Image (tube, rainbow, N blue to C red; front, side, top):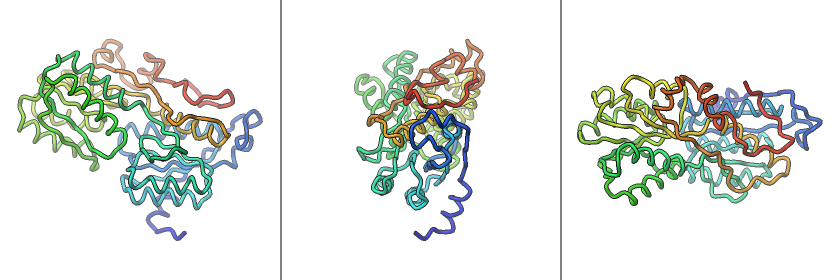
Length: 347
Protein backbone atom coordinates (compact mmCIF):
# COMPACT_ATOMS: atom_id res chain seq x y z
CA UNK A 1 0.00 0.00 0.00
CA UNK A 2 1.40 3.38 -0.96
CA UNK A 3 1.12 5.86 1.91
CA UNK A 4 0.68 9.57 1.34
CA UNK A 5 3.21 11.98 2.81
CA UNK A 6 0.48 13.35 5.08
CA UNK A 7 -0.49 9.97 6.46
CA UNK A 8 3.10 8.82 6.82
CA UNK A 9 3.80 11.94 8.90
CA UNK A 10 0.79 11.28 11.10
CA UNK A 11 1.81 7.65 11.49
CA UNK A 12 5.42 8.42 12.34
CA UNK A 13 4.71 11.18 14.82
CA UNK A 14 1.93 9.17 16.46
CA UNK A 15 4.04 6.16 17.40
CA UNK A 16 4.41 5.52 21.10
CA UNK A 17 6.22 2.48 22.38
CA UNK A 18 5.09 1.41 25.81
CA UNK A 19 7.45 -1.44 26.65
CA UNK A 20 6.55 -1.81 30.30
CA UNK A 21 7.73 -4.64 32.49
CA UNK A 22 4.66 -6.77 32.98
CA UNK A 23 4.85 -10.14 34.67
CA UNK A 24 4.87 -11.95 31.34
CA UNK A 25 5.37 -15.43 32.76
CA UNK A 26 1.97 -15.25 34.46
CA UNK A 27 0.04 -14.11 31.39
CA UNK A 28 -1.53 -16.06 28.54
CA UNK A 29 -0.24 -15.93 24.98
CA UNK A 30 0.52 -13.60 23.30
CA UNK A 31 1.25 -11.63 26.47
CA UNK A 32 3.87 -14.13 27.63
CA UNK A 33 6.00 -12.20 25.12
CA UNK A 34 4.39 -8.75 25.39
CA UNK A 35 7.20 -6.95 23.57
CA UNK A 36 6.13 -8.78 20.41
CA UNK A 37 2.56 -7.45 20.69
CA UNK A 38 1.62 -4.21 18.94
CA UNK A 39 -1.71 -2.42 19.15
CA UNK A 40 -2.91 0.75 17.44
CA UNK A 41 -5.23 3.48 18.67
CA UNK A 42 -6.93 5.16 15.70
CA UNK A 43 -8.51 8.42 16.84
CA UNK A 44 -11.13 10.68 15.28
CA UNK A 45 -11.56 13.20 18.12
CA UNK A 46 -8.60 14.39 20.16
CA UNK A 47 -9.37 18.02 21.12
CA UNK A 48 -10.12 18.66 24.78
CA UNK A 49 -9.21 17.36 28.20
CA UNK A 50 -11.46 14.29 27.94
CA UNK A 51 -9.54 12.90 24.99
CA UNK A 52 -6.16 13.65 26.50
CA UNK A 53 -7.19 11.79 29.65
CA UNK A 54 -8.55 8.91 27.56
CA UNK A 55 -5.22 8.68 25.74
CA UNK A 56 -3.43 8.70 29.09
CA UNK A 57 -5.47 5.70 30.20
CA UNK A 58 -4.73 3.82 26.98
CA UNK A 59 -1.02 4.53 27.40
CA UNK A 60 -1.01 3.50 31.07
CA UNK A 61 -2.74 0.16 30.46
CA UNK A 62 -0.56 -0.59 27.44
CA UNK A 63 2.52 0.07 29.57
CA UNK A 64 1.20 -2.16 32.35
CA UNK A 65 0.81 -4.97 29.81
CA UNK A 66 4.22 -4.28 28.30
CA UNK A 67 2.92 -4.03 24.73
CA UNK A 68 3.82 -1.58 22.01
CA UNK A 69 1.26 1.13 21.37
CA UNK A 70 0.99 3.14 18.18
CA UNK A 71 -1.27 6.23 18.18
CA UNK A 72 -2.72 7.50 14.90
CA UNK A 73 -4.64 10.77 15.14
CA UNK A 74 -6.87 11.83 12.23
CA UNK A 75 -7.95 15.13 13.88
CA UNK A 76 -11.58 14.80 12.77
CA UNK A 77 -10.73 13.86 9.19
CA UNK A 78 -13.01 10.91 8.47
CA UNK A 79 -11.22 9.86 5.27
CA UNK A 80 -7.83 10.02 6.99
CA UNK A 81 -9.12 7.93 9.91
CA UNK A 82 -10.23 5.23 7.48
CA UNK A 83 -6.84 5.41 5.77
CA UNK A 84 -5.13 5.07 9.14
CA UNK A 85 -6.96 1.81 9.83
CA UNK A 86 -5.54 0.54 6.54
CA UNK A 87 -2.08 1.71 7.62
CA UNK A 88 -2.40 -0.22 10.87
CA UNK A 89 -3.43 -3.30 8.89
CA UNK A 90 -0.42 -2.90 6.59
CA UNK A 91 1.87 -2.61 9.60
CA UNK A 92 0.61 -5.95 10.87
CA UNK A 93 -0.58 -4.79 14.28
CA UNK A 94 -2.23 -7.40 16.46
CA UNK A 95 -5.13 -5.23 17.62
CA UNK A 96 -6.82 -1.92 16.89
CA UNK A 97 -8.86 0.45 19.06
CA UNK A 98 -11.09 2.69 16.95
CA UNK A 99 -11.87 5.80 19.02
CA UNK A 100 -14.88 7.80 17.81
CA UNK A 101 -15.57 8.46 14.16
CA UNK A 102 -18.43 8.24 11.68
CA UNK A 103 -20.24 4.99 10.98
CA UNK A 104 -20.27 5.56 7.24
CA UNK A 105 -16.51 6.03 7.04
CA UNK A 106 -15.42 3.46 9.63
CA UNK A 107 -17.72 0.50 8.96
CA UNK A 108 -15.86 -0.77 5.89
CA UNK A 109 -12.43 0.03 7.36
CA UNK A 110 -13.23 -1.90 10.53
CA UNK A 111 -14.40 -4.87 8.47
CA UNK A 112 -11.13 -4.83 6.53
CA UNK A 113 -9.25 -5.11 9.81
CA UNK A 114 -11.41 -8.05 10.93
CA UNK A 115 -10.91 -9.73 7.54
CA UNK A 116 -7.15 -9.36 8.04
CA UNK A 117 -7.40 -11.34 11.28
CA UNK A 118 -6.88 -8.32 13.55
CA UNK A 119 -8.77 -7.98 16.82
CA UNK A 120 -10.73 -4.71 16.96
CA UNK A 121 -12.68 -2.83 19.63
CA UNK A 122 -14.57 0.43 19.09
CA UNK A 123 -15.06 3.22 21.61
CA UNK A 124 -18.02 5.52 21.00
CA UNK A 125 -18.36 4.72 17.31
CA UNK A 126 -20.90 2.24 15.96
CA UNK A 127 -19.15 0.27 13.23
CA UNK A 128 -22.15 -2.10 12.98
CA UNK A 129 -20.05 -5.23 13.27
CA UNK A 130 -20.88 -8.15 15.56
CA UNK A 131 -17.20 -9.14 15.69
CA UNK A 132 -16.24 -5.82 17.28
CA UNK A 133 -17.12 -5.13 20.95
CA UNK A 134 -18.43 -1.64 21.67
CA UNK A 135 -16.82 0.22 24.57
CA UNK A 136 -19.15 2.88 25.93
CA UNK A 137 -19.92 4.99 28.96
CA UNK A 138 -23.63 4.15 28.84
CA UNK A 139 -24.23 7.35 26.96
CA UNK A 140 -27.98 7.06 27.41
CA UNK A 141 -27.43 7.08 31.20
CA UNK A 142 -25.09 10.06 30.86
CA UNK A 143 -27.86 12.03 29.22
CA UNK A 144 -30.65 10.66 31.38
CA UNK A 145 -28.97 11.36 34.74
CA UNK A 146 -28.11 14.91 33.68
CA UNK A 147 -31.70 15.55 32.61
CA UNK A 148 -33.10 14.06 35.81
CA UNK A 149 -31.00 16.61 37.70
CA UNK A 150 -32.20 19.40 35.40
CA UNK A 151 -35.81 18.48 36.19
CA UNK A 152 -35.06 18.19 39.91
CA UNK A 153 -33.55 21.70 39.86
CA UNK A 154 -35.98 23.42 37.48
CA UNK A 155 -39.23 21.46 37.57
CA UNK A 156 -40.74 19.79 34.53
CA UNK A 157 -41.63 22.99 32.69
CA UNK A 158 -38.87 25.15 31.22
CA UNK A 159 -37.55 26.59 27.97
CA UNK A 160 -34.30 24.97 26.90
CA UNK A 161 -31.55 25.14 24.33
CA UNK A 162 -29.94 21.90 23.20
CA UNK A 163 -26.40 21.47 21.83
CA UNK A 164 -26.16 18.50 19.46
CA UNK A 165 -24.24 17.31 16.41
CA UNK A 166 -25.82 14.22 14.79
CA UNK A 167 -23.83 11.33 13.40
CA UNK A 168 -21.48 10.89 16.38
CA UNK A 169 -22.45 7.68 18.20
CA UNK A 170 -22.20 8.94 21.83
CA UNK A 171 -24.07 12.14 21.00
CA UNK A 172 -26.74 10.17 19.16
CA UNK A 173 -27.24 7.92 22.19
CA UNK A 174 -27.44 10.96 24.48
CA UNK A 175 -29.95 12.47 22.07
CA UNK A 176 -32.28 9.52 22.72
CA UNK A 177 -32.27 10.46 26.41
CA UNK A 178 -33.15 14.07 25.48
CA UNK A 179 -36.02 12.99 23.25
CA UNK A 180 -37.32 10.59 25.92
CA UNK A 181 -37.16 13.28 28.62
CA UNK A 182 -39.15 15.68 26.45
CA UNK A 183 -41.79 13.05 25.69
CA UNK A 184 -42.15 12.26 29.39
CA UNK A 185 -42.20 15.97 30.30
CA UNK A 186 -44.13 17.92 27.64
CA UNK A 187 -43.54 21.12 29.58
CA UNK A 188 -39.90 21.07 28.46
CA UNK A 189 -39.76 23.21 25.35
CA UNK A 190 -36.76 23.07 23.03
CA UNK A 191 -36.56 26.61 21.69
CA UNK A 192 -33.19 26.24 19.96
CA UNK A 193 -30.84 23.51 18.80
CA UNK A 194 -27.29 24.19 17.69
CA UNK A 195 -23.81 22.67 17.79
CA UNK A 196 -20.55 22.17 15.92
CA UNK A 197 -17.38 20.10 16.13
CA UNK A 198 -15.28 22.72 14.38
CA UNK A 199 -11.99 23.31 16.18
CA UNK A 200 -11.58 24.80 18.69
CA UNK A 201 -14.90 23.27 19.66
CA UNK A 202 -15.63 25.35 22.77
CA UNK A 203 -15.00 28.65 21.01
CA UNK A 204 -17.01 27.61 17.95
CA UNK A 205 -19.96 26.61 20.14
CA UNK A 206 -19.64 29.88 22.08
CA UNK A 207 -20.02 31.80 18.83
CA UNK A 208 -23.28 29.96 18.11
CA UNK A 209 -24.55 30.24 21.68
CA UNK A 210 -24.19 34.04 21.71
CA UNK A 211 -26.68 34.32 18.86
CA UNK A 212 -29.04 31.76 20.38
CA UNK A 213 -29.12 33.49 23.77
CA UNK A 214 -29.65 36.88 22.20
CA UNK A 215 -32.56 35.60 20.11
CA UNK A 216 -34.13 33.63 23.00
CA UNK A 217 -33.77 35.64 26.22
CA UNK A 218 -36.20 33.37 28.09
CA UNK A 219 -33.97 30.25 27.97
CA UNK A 220 -33.36 28.96 31.50
CA UNK A 221 -31.75 25.55 30.81
CA UNK A 222 -29.08 24.46 28.34
CA UNK A 223 -28.50 20.75 27.81
CA UNK A 224 -24.96 20.44 26.42
CA UNK A 225 -24.10 16.73 26.68
CA UNK A 226 -20.37 17.01 25.93
CA UNK A 227 -18.05 19.07 28.10
CA UNK A 228 -16.53 21.04 25.21
CA UNK A 229 -20.09 22.08 24.31
CA UNK A 230 -20.73 23.11 27.92
CA UNK A 231 -17.52 25.15 28.01
CA UNK A 232 -18.63 27.04 24.93
CA UNK A 233 -22.10 27.71 26.31
CA UNK A 234 -20.61 28.93 29.59
CA UNK A 235 -18.38 31.39 27.71
CA UNK A 236 -21.45 32.86 26.01
CA UNK A 237 -23.54 32.87 29.19
CA UNK A 238 -20.79 34.65 31.12
CA UNK A 239 -20.32 37.25 28.39
CA UNK A 240 -24.07 37.85 28.26
CA UNK A 241 -24.32 38.33 32.02
CA UNK A 242 -26.88 35.50 32.30
CA UNK A 243 -25.15 33.25 34.83
CA UNK A 244 -27.90 33.77 37.39
CA UNK A 245 -30.64 32.99 34.86
CA UNK A 246 -29.38 29.88 33.05
CA UNK A 247 -28.38 26.41 34.30
CA UNK A 248 -26.06 24.26 32.15
CA UNK A 249 -26.16 20.45 32.30
CA UNK A 250 -23.51 18.40 30.56
CA UNK A 251 -21.69 15.10 30.19
CA UNK A 252 -18.00 14.29 30.77
CA UNK A 253 -15.62 15.92 33.22
CA UNK A 254 -12.01 17.09 33.52
CA UNK A 255 -9.93 19.20 35.90
CA UNK A 256 -10.64 22.31 33.84
CA UNK A 257 -14.37 21.46 33.87
CA UNK A 258 -14.28 21.22 37.66
CA UNK A 259 -12.64 24.64 37.82
CA UNK A 260 -15.30 26.10 35.52
CA UNK A 261 -18.14 24.57 37.53
CA UNK A 262 -16.71 25.95 40.78
CA UNK A 263 -16.27 29.53 39.62
CA UNK A 264 -18.41 31.87 41.77
CA UNK A 265 -21.89 32.07 40.29
CA UNK A 266 -21.10 29.52 37.56
CA UNK A 267 -24.07 28.52 35.40
CA UNK A 268 -22.59 25.02 34.91
CA UNK A 269 -24.39 23.21 37.70
CA UNK A 270 -24.08 19.50 36.92
CA UNK A 271 -22.39 16.95 34.69
CA UNK A 272 -22.50 13.18 34.41
CA UNK A 273 -19.29 11.35 33.66
CA UNK A 274 -16.97 8.43 33.83
CA UNK A 275 -13.26 8.92 34.30
CA UNK A 276 -11.96 9.12 30.72
CA UNK A 277 -8.64 7.64 31.81
CA UNK A 278 -10.48 4.60 33.18
CA UNK A 279 -12.40 4.24 29.90
CA UNK A 280 -9.06 4.27 28.07
CA UNK A 281 -7.76 1.52 30.33
CA UNK A 282 -10.91 -0.54 29.78
CA UNK A 283 -10.53 -0.16 26.00
CA UNK A 284 -7.03 -1.68 26.11
CA UNK A 285 -8.02 -4.42 28.56
CA UNK A 286 -10.95 -5.48 26.39
CA UNK A 287 -8.72 -5.64 23.33
CA UNK A 288 -6.15 -7.65 25.32
CA UNK A 289 -8.84 -10.14 26.34
CA UNK A 290 -9.73 -10.63 22.68
CA UNK A 291 -6.09 -11.20 21.79
CA UNK A 292 -5.90 -13.82 24.57
CA UNK A 293 -8.95 -15.59 23.15
CA UNK A 294 -11.30 -14.62 25.96
CA UNK A 295 -14.95 -13.59 25.65
CA UNK A 296 -15.72 -9.90 26.17
CA UNK A 297 -19.37 -9.63 25.23
CA UNK A 298 -20.78 -7.38 22.51
CA UNK A 299 -21.02 -4.31 24.75
CA UNK A 300 -18.58 -3.24 27.45
CA UNK A 301 -20.11 -0.52 29.60
CA UNK A 302 -18.34 1.75 32.10
CA UNK A 303 -21.06 3.14 34.41
CA UNK A 304 -21.29 6.95 34.82
CA UNK A 305 -21.77 9.11 37.92
CA UNK A 306 -23.66 12.36 38.53
CA UNK A 307 -21.36 15.20 39.63
CA UNK A 308 -23.01 18.38 40.84
CA UNK A 309 -21.57 21.80 41.49
CA UNK A 310 -22.83 21.51 45.07
CA UNK A 311 -20.92 18.24 45.58
CA UNK A 312 -17.71 19.77 44.23
CA UNK A 313 -18.04 22.81 46.46
CA UNK A 314 -19.05 20.90 49.58
CA UNK A 315 -16.04 18.59 49.25
CA UNK A 316 -13.66 21.31 48.03
CA UNK A 317 -12.73 19.27 44.95
CA UNK A 318 -10.41 21.02 42.52
CA UNK A 319 -9.08 18.27 40.24
CA UNK A 320 -9.66 14.77 38.93
CA UNK A 321 -7.47 13.13 41.58
CA UNK A 322 -9.54 14.67 44.37
CA UNK A 323 -12.74 13.68 42.59
CA UNK A 324 -11.49 10.09 42.37
CA UNK A 325 -10.67 10.14 46.09
CA UNK A 326 -14.20 11.30 46.95
CA UNK A 327 -15.80 8.96 44.39
CA UNK A 328 -13.95 5.60 44.48
CA UNK A 329 -15.90 4.34 41.48
CA UNK A 330 -14.24 7.11 39.52
CA UNK A 331 -10.69 5.85 40.09
CA UNK A 332 -11.20 2.34 38.73
CA UNK A 333 -13.89 0.30 37.01
CA UNK A 334 -14.17 -3.45 37.60
CA UNK A 335 -14.76 -3.94 33.90
CA UNK A 336 -12.71 -6.28 31.67
CA UNK A 337 -10.43 -7.35 34.52
CA UNK A 338 -9.48 -11.05 34.22
CA UNK A 339 -7.27 -12.47 36.96
CA UNK A 340 -4.14 -12.38 34.82
CA UNK A 341 -4.49 -8.74 33.77
CA UNK A 342 -1.83 -6.37 35.18
CA UNK A 343 -3.22 -2.94 35.99
CA UNK A 344 -1.55 0.48 35.97
CA UNK A 345 -0.17 1.56 39.36
CA UNK A 346 -2.64 3.39 41.59
CA UNK A 347 -1.75 6.39 43.71
